[in-house]
Image 1 (cartoon, rainbow, N blue to C red):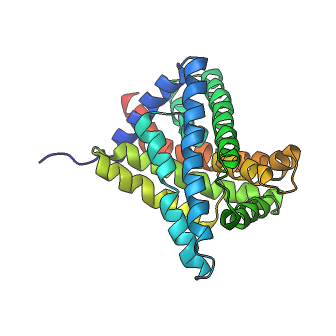
Image 2 (image 1 turned 180 degrees about the vertical axis):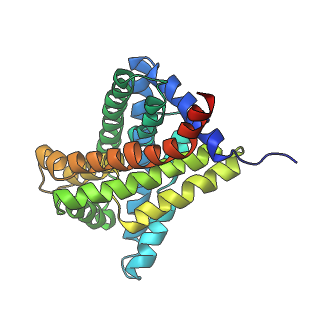
Length: 262
């Protein structure tokens, strides 16, 4: 019978192999692929704003569900195009624990991919704003999203970041398990839809939402954007995606195999 998906132990090996490749990318490739990933996530973010602004008079839960249903396109584009997304690359710690990559190699990837994601996200926000796509109908939703994200405490942003990237890396994990594009679409869609619906915080998505809100007139400074949201959310994303999920599956699938070989 034809195999439809990878077993968990096979997924860990595939992710570790992918991390080895990522750790050895040139800085130029990391930046370029990081820029594109930032743009793709921003596309999903803008689609979310477009959908929720048309649903202001319906139930808030339904509005969030419909908005969340289009956001996953961003990660789909990242995965299918082979772009580099910081939050997904948090899974590289699995290869670090397995001693397949060095800490320096992993941090090199994280730093330049994060920078590329930021450049791509803010560039898209600038282009969308100057393309006059933030119409009067969209303006209120754009400002409200930015205001909501900069009005939460450091702890709240941090904890929501943890929850978010647990789901994001599980989406990457599930996509790795899938052996056909239809399965990959579904395996990405459900976890990403869930994190958006739940109100969790994703640092790369916020690199688009917050600059777009600032360009559109929200009274926040660049330091506000970083201190009130991006820093705590990024730290939370690292805990959820680089510590919790990789450690669990390293202990469950990689460590037993290493012990059996020793």
